[in-house]
Image 1 (cartoon, rainbow, N blue to C red):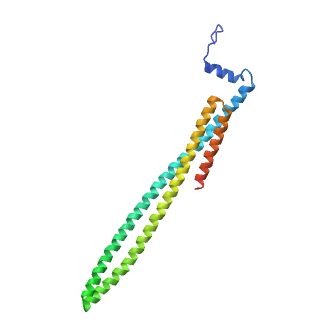
Image 2 (cartoon, rainbow, N blue to C red):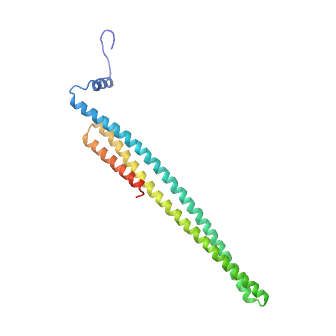
Length: 199
């Protein structure tokens, strides 16, 4: 406002002035103000929850990768044990052949080797089977983490849709969009709860 009483302002200033004075008709604008406040509060809450879900989704994805890596390591170790087992089997077969072709003290020496290789193979087989079981367990844990990651990602996506509906509801002032926004937000939180419960 200038000194001579001339008043110039833009549309934004007019809307602010209008809102602070309660609008021209009163009731309709108070209802819109309430709607705006509800949408703003909803958006802030859902954005915060969505950020937490997104973090959890990233954490479970990282865990799934780590567990899959552990499974691969155990599978490699098991494969090494089976290769070692095969080498002992070959040595045992050669010792059996030598025993069968020998006589006297040499035959007893080769028989002792056959028995030693047989015992070593049993220990190696046990170690290889334990490593294979550990690899399977790591694989299962990785799969569980990936399932949970997908749940977190689904929840985050639904919450993002709810935020988009909130923006559209705010622009269009359509009550049904506001209901849709609340409903979609509720679905997103429910999917997040499923993720938290490992379902």
